[in-house]
Structure formats: C-alpha cells, structure tokens
Amino acid sequence: MTATGPAERHSARFTPSTAVLLVLALLGALVLRNIFVAAHRVIGWGVATVVVATLLDPPITWLSRFVPKVLALLLAGLGIAAVAGALVYGVFDDLETETSALRDRGPAAAASLEERDDRIGDVARDLRLTERAEDAFEALEERFGAGTQVLATAAGTVPSYFVSFILTIFFILYGNRIFRGAVDQVDDPRRRRRFENVVRTGVRRGRSYLWWALLQGSVVGGATFLVADQLDLPAPTVLGLVAAVAASVPYIGIVIGVVPTVLMTAGLRSPEAGAAIVAVALTAQVVEALVVRRLVDRRTLHVGPAIPVIVGSVGLEVYGIGGALYGVALAVFLLATADAAATEADEPLPTPNQDWAGDPGPAVDPAPDGGSGGGSTPPGGGADATLEQVPAEVVVAPAPAASPPPGVAR
View 1 (cartoon, one colour):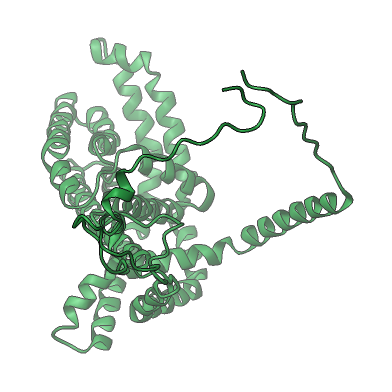
View 2 (tube, one colour):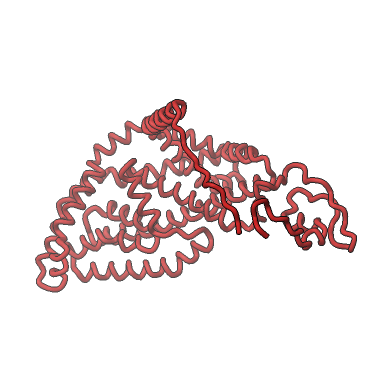
C-alpha cells in the first residue's frame, strides 16, 4: 500500500514586471503589424524578384554555356521585355474595346439562352444566368478598368518594374552565394547537409511544377484564343487570358476556364457549337487528370486545386492580379520544400542530446566474450553505430531490483 502525502498546490503570481512585459509585447506586435502594412509593397517586390530569378536561373545557366553570363542575362531580359511588350500591346491596346464588348454582349448572350423553350432554357432560367452574367462582367470591368486607365497605371509603375528588374539580376548573380551563407550558419554538418538537400530539392521540384503549369496554361489559353477568334466572338484575347489563368488549376481549371467562351458561343452562335467546346474541354480535362497530372506528380510534386484557388483568391483581393500569381508561386515553393523534407532519403536527424559535431565521448573497451565494441563513435556514425560499440552484456543485462522507497510497503 502506497502512502500518499497532501497534494502539491501551485499558484501563479501576476507581478508588475509581467504586466509591463505583456504591454510591451502588445505594442511590439502593433509596431510590427504597421511596419508590414507600410512595407508590404516593397516586400511584394522582393518576393516577386526571388520567384522570377528562381524560374529564370535554369535557362540562363544553360545559355551561359555558349555565351558569357552577362550576355545571357541581357538576352533573357530582352526576351522577357519582348513577351511583356507583346502582351501589353495585344491585351491593353484592345482591352477597353473588348471589355466593353463583353459587358454589352455577354448578358445578351445569357438572355438569349433563357428565352429558349427547350431544356437549355429551363436550366438557364433556373440558374438566373442573365443576372449572374451581368454581375460577372461588371466585376471584370471594375477589376481591370478601361484600357487607357490600365496603361496610365502601368506607366506610373515603370520605376518599380525597373527596380524589380535590377533585384532580379542581383538574385540571379548572387542568389547561390546568399543561400550558401545561410547554410553555413548551421554548425552541425549533418543538419547542414540535410537542410541544403531539402531546400535545393524543394526549389527544383517547385520550379519544375511552375514551368509545367505555365506550359499548360499557355496551350489552353492559346487554343481558346484561336477558337474565339475563328468564331468571331467578342474579346478573344480576354477569353484566352481567362482560360490560361484558370487552366493552371489542376483537375478543374480547363473546364472552368472555357465557361465564358462556351457562354458566348452558345448565346451568339449556336448551342451545338457551345456543346462541342464543352466536349473538347471535358476530354482535355480527363487527359490532364489521368495522364498529364500523373506525369507531373511523378516528376515534380502533387498539388491539388485547393492551394491555387485559396491562395489565388486571397492574393487577388489583397494585392491584385500580381499578388494572386506570385502568391500561388510562393505557396508551391513552400509546399515543395515541405514535401522534400518529408521524403528526404538521407539518414535521420540526430536527437538534441546527441552531440555529433563535438566530442563523441570516451572509448568503450571490447567485451570479454568477444562482443562488438572498440573505439569511439565517429561523427555522423548514427545511433546504430553507437549501440554496436556498447558491450553486449551491458545492453542485455537486467537492471538490479531497486529497494522500495520510504513509505512504500513491501
């Protein structure tokens, strides 16, 4: 029978110093919050330049095999400027006209579907298609505005883009040195090697996934633009951009991206043409889910539709279209790094009580019966090596029976 004493009681004291520390912590949190809000634009520039530099590093490295790296950077910059200029000319030049056309003809196409007497008209009326189309196209016009307004805003941000371009070149040239300096701050060699492997693997997988997403979006967006242009639909460039952005969402993006094109085709051309576009989009979505997605997941990492949708929606509301794009890219890199840390095939990390970088401890003499033993454990030898160097009888010998503590009956 065990003798039990009175229960020990604990009390918490709220001293004046604790109150002062609590107030200072709250003030510090408010100051950090205000600093982040005031500097969120600069922080966004930094994140965007790191993402762009990470994506451009492989093609610049490949190009630098044939030409000097400075020339490779200049060629890459000229290529980016050419693509950006083409997009600006192709999109913003006709954006005002195309957005107005969508705003005027989109609800008309939805109304024509509701006026039908067949099953399509019943479904359109049940969905209140005209009302939803008016809300969607009004939101599109409010989000992107008139083309002249967009061009004026873009012209005012030219210095920001110039600074971002300089930062991108800086990270391309010195990003690896910066990363090496961060890795060298880890003292333990095994932890340092594990940290470097995880980060490099995560960056490589995330970058490959983003290139696949860009390729898929470009193919779907280009095909949508060609179809809309051949059918003489209003705003083919905008319809192609919507399809390209939505197609980057796995498993559901292709079908969602062609919804505006299907609506305009069914309302302004014929329901049969709209049904044909739906059939092609469904077929492409099935191929993407069963073939392309498996190939991408095996070579890069698995990303579901939730992360692009949630992160993209939050980034769009907070920072606009740039926040949505770079937010999704940053989320993919973080997910790839976490996946690399979970699937790293390196030997397990040492526990905190194992000093692998320091003195391994005194040597253990061999066991008298010839059991394994010997010198000290080499750094990085692992826990199994430590157990092998302990005499066998020490490992398997039973512990002596302890005498009962005072107050405990035998």
